[in-house]
Image (cartoon, rainbow, N blue to C red; front, top):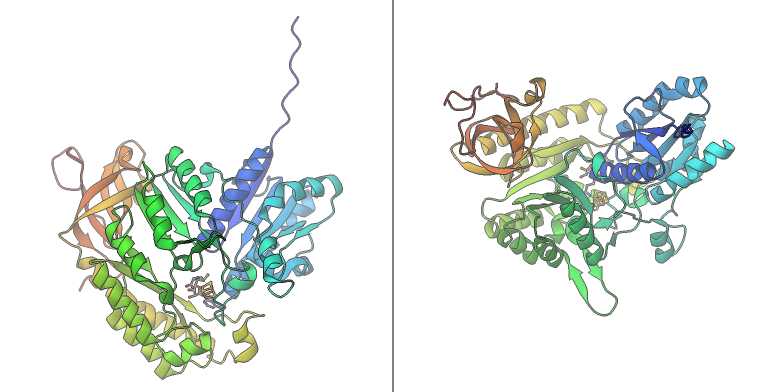
Length: 493
Ligand code: SAM
Ligand code: SF4
């Protein structure tokens, strides 16, 4: 008689919710990778998960409120099952530390952005002892620069491809932290000092990703174009040189990078973007305000005139480049006249799009210490609306200028509308152009992950509509795309 082998222990499950920027998306990928190696499987059922993680953002108060209300929702799960481990990780954890447990005492684990590699070990300790665990890095003034830098570790190579939204696209962190200290911003505290990664380590990661089937990498850093690696022997690797080395990786098709700091937009970088065919012709360069007084209170380190110079130089050196921006409205002391200057610049700058935020005072920042948050919320809301409406009009013009063009698109998957149809047939797919525009067109699922040409026939505010050139008849009846989707966003006038 053969003995029945003992049943394998049921694997533990982890559920994760991520808010915030690309950095957080990548961090979640890394954390899940590490937990899977520790025996966890990912679940989207929060009620039954053995471990629940909230990867958090502190940039605006609203993001923190969202996390606390999510924590409120899971409190009953913890009451019902005291063995469930609940963790708050990322920026809020670094910023508030143990104070998070004052509002949510059932949180077992608090881990800052620079300590994420410790999560599997800390969770094991909680399971064994039920004692809450805290791991955060040093504050910016808690040691000398080297000590603070060392307390923020980055562990990018240990990532999990399954966490990515597509297997052929990946973020690669080339820099952690930020040293710009814009007065409104928590990031220099929550992510620590600016540190550029060794180019060999970045290159190695890109090669691994390409071996796993990745076609497009997005290089990320808070001010990605400030990247410079000091080898310590007199040699330095600049961002343009790093891009050149990444460009040489066989099998890689596209390179993107975000976010740029206006003052660090050097000509060697612009020329690299122009000359290297794999590099996307798109620059996200936040201006934040069209008024010099506001920029100065924000300590953005440039004037509106210098931003215009950078914008003209970028467009001159990279013909056809798309540029997008971020704006904060209602910053301390922003008068109607100052706000009008942001309107004027959006009116004239031809941004592809802009991300617009209402100023949110962040405790601990220089702006919170120095200036009154004196623009009423109703005014912030109105300015946000007005700037967005103006940008939407400009975005529509930008999109319509592409009607009639043939653009190269990396196909990302079914569009929201396409996802409603069954897989296998012809459905609406979505992709990004080399200028980061969104294009939708009809096609079979096997085009997903491919780079192909799309003839643009129509445009809405942020979306181009067209027909894919596949060398075959799409839709089976010889007609152009079976149904040109309804226009979204602003109506055409
Ligand atoms: N490092 C990037 C840069 O310098 O542009 C962006 C980082 S930040 C996470 C993304 C955007 O959030 C910023 O460009 C800014 O517009 C906005 N932001 C940052 N702090 C803010 C605050 N306190 N209130 C409102 N928006 C804020
Ligand atoms: Fe924040 Fe300014 Fe650094 Fe961007 S550059 S992360 S806005 S401090």
